Length: 79
Image (cartoon, rainbow, N blue to C red; front, side, top):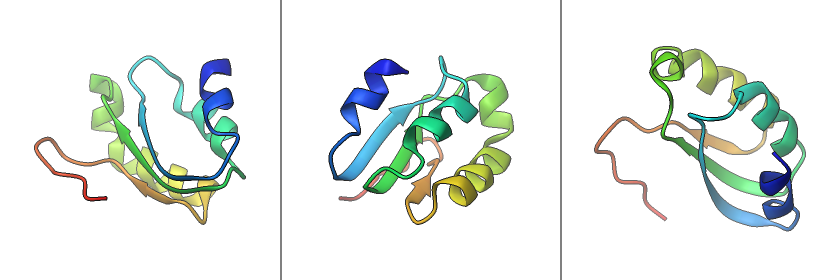
C-alpha cells in the first residue's frame, strides 16, 4: 500500500489499479480524499469479481467524487 500511496500524492486524471492482490478496503483508505478524477479497477480475484457490484458501489460511496469503474472483460476504457 505504501507504493500506491506514493503514486497518488499529486492530482491525477486517471488511475488504473489492480485489485487482485490487495484488500479493497485498504485501497479505499489510501485513495479517499486524493485528487483523482477517475479510477479504473482491473485484475480482480475470482472472489472480487463475483462481488464486483458490491465493491463498485462501496468504492463509489467512499471515494466520491471520483468516477469509479470496474469494467467487464473486453471493454475498452476511453481517455
